[in-house]
Amino acid sequence: MSNTAACTHLASLERVLNAEKVECEECVKTGSRWVHLRTCQACGGTRCCDSSPNRHASKHARAASHPVVCSAEAGERWLYCYPDDETAEY
Ligand SMILES: [Zn+2]
Ligand SMILES: [Zn+2]
Ligand SMILES: [Zn+2]
View 1 (spheres, rainbow, N blue to C red):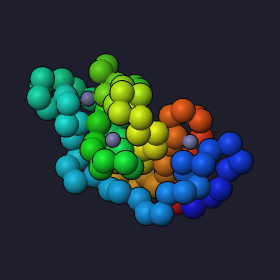
View 2: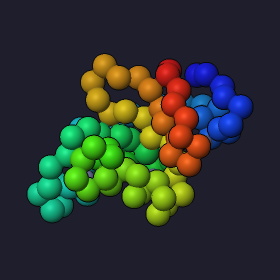
View 3: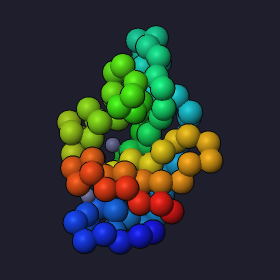
């Protein structure tokens, strides 16, 4: 876990929550499609990325004040903080 000066969210994360299901929990309700998936590190919910039409992960981050997600894509090991626009590998 790399520390950054700007973001305390990434620095204070003790473990990474991985996706329980590899699908966007909002898109499956409406039958929408997604491009990539992100897992919220505050509640463990998995939602779609900003390249997806519905951008559920960033909407959730703002609405719930849950700043940090990890990539839920196979083989990707990184975290992202929305409010600070910081990325960290793990
Ligand atoms: Zn942050
Ligand atoms: Zn979605
Ligand atoms: Zn959340």
